[in-house]
Length: 184
Image (cartoon, rainbow, N blue to C red; front, top):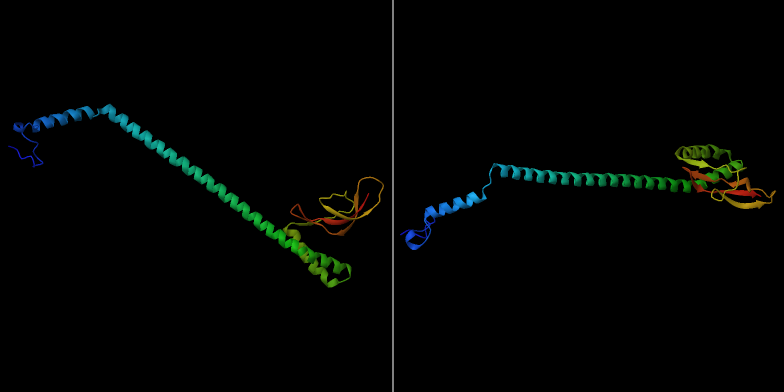
């Protein structure tokens, strides 16, 4: 009688257990049922290749999206940084305008020593984007001018006749409107 505890033996015919030959035949039948022929192997290889290509394409698309998002983020932050620097420069210029006004007032009152300092400060600010407004003779524009005096005119369009305080533009935007006397 065969030892049933021995993993190498399956059992014998005397106790109704299958023989080694019948087990081998059963495995052969199962193997034959599930084995694939050469054509099926090619289909499986093509399927796995297609699957790998799809996965590769998905990863490539995801990488391209992430790269585009990062490029957009970098552009947004660079633009925000530039705007922050621009606002800081504009704020500094606004704080320097009273100094320019004081220099102009000193020059009007014959303080000749202030002239070179005023000229250097104004030239430096002009290089950076400051533009003084010269409104005399132009039509009155409330976005550019602040009318503080008015004199009667001929009934036509209101025009600026005198500038009482210089107005300034900073890179095309009104930094401070000109204080003017208007006729009309």
